[in-house]
Amino acid sequence: MFVPGSTATLASYGIVLPFGPPAAEATASGPGARPAGGPIGRPGGTNRQTNVVTTSVTMATINDTLNAIGEGTAASSVTVSSPSGGNLAEVLVRPGQVVAAGDVIARLDAEAEQIALDRAKLAVEDATATLTRTEGLASSNVVATTALTAAQLAAANADLELRNAEVDLARRTITSPIAGTVGLIRVTAGNYVPAQTTVTTIDDTSAILVDFWVPERYAAAIAIDTPVTVTAIALPGRNFEGQVSAIDNRIDPASRTLQVQAEIPNDDAALRAGMSFSVALRFSGEQYPTVNPLAILWSAEGSYVWKYDAGKATRVMAEIVQRNSDGVLVRGDLRPGDAIITEGILQLSEGAEVTLLDGPDGAPSSTAASEL
Image 1 (cartoon, rainbow, N blue to C red):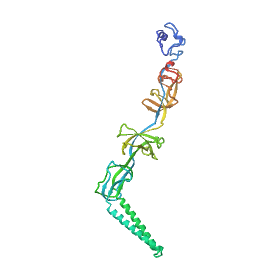
Image 2 (tube, rainbow, N blue to C red):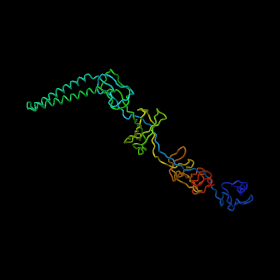
Image 3 (cartoon, rainbow, N blue to C red):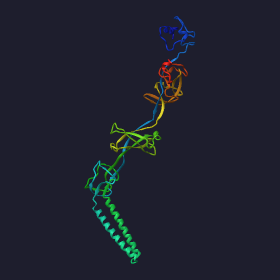
Image 4 (cartoon, helix red, strand yellow):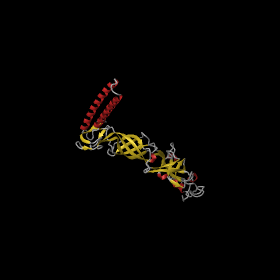
């Protein structure tokens, strides 16, 4: 640059610089030959082009996956209690046993209730016979209408007493209200059991309900039947598929989160109520152009990048959306495959001519070699 004619001298030895002189200097002979316009890099001389390296713009998707921690509960769970007090005569199930709805869990002593039922049956028979005789006499006008009414009332009261005795006797038998698996037995046969004493719990684990919380910004993206994938900490390596079954109707003001419930089929009974789960949901997400972090520059208007376009540098404003380890997601007028300058950016100006040394040129039909 500082020795006139040096470029031509190097060219005679086969050394051609990327920013070589005009043809007039290249053909000049002699060690003192100079171009007509003056030395390179000085007023009146040839303008120097900047060598650049580019990388392609790619597209990246964000906010397409949500991970949360949830807790599982049974599809239905019932705490079985003693409906009345008394001595526990027998327990007919064991922990872990699968029972159907209506199966007998345990029985209380029921001798007094059985006697009351038998007495009520006798009272019903007697009241019914009295009502039959009175109706026959009333049809012959032998008895007054008031006597018939009294007999009918006595028969109805006797029937109510019978039904009441049947209910009392039924309360001496503890049955399962749902189908499911029996939990631990909390009482022992032979002991006195007060009313409302917990006998055991029954869980229907044919499906597991997983409750989890999601950030407020996902509230509009989650809907009923949205697919979910869960993994249980107790069962590493296994994935379970399910779907969203319920969504709360309000955002928690303290945590700014929304409670969501997913239903996971449990056909093989591998999952249990109370397990903790890692929940993953997928969404369509948002797509943004991704550029090399080295391409980002700043000005008074904000962040921008230099785009290589037909041998010239063009400035494109690029608002940073998210920084990742492999690139920077930006919001700007960029398309996949656009060539973004990553090296030589400090010497650029709008519309400046540049020489592409390496990287794509942004044109699918061209290559960096053809540019050179």
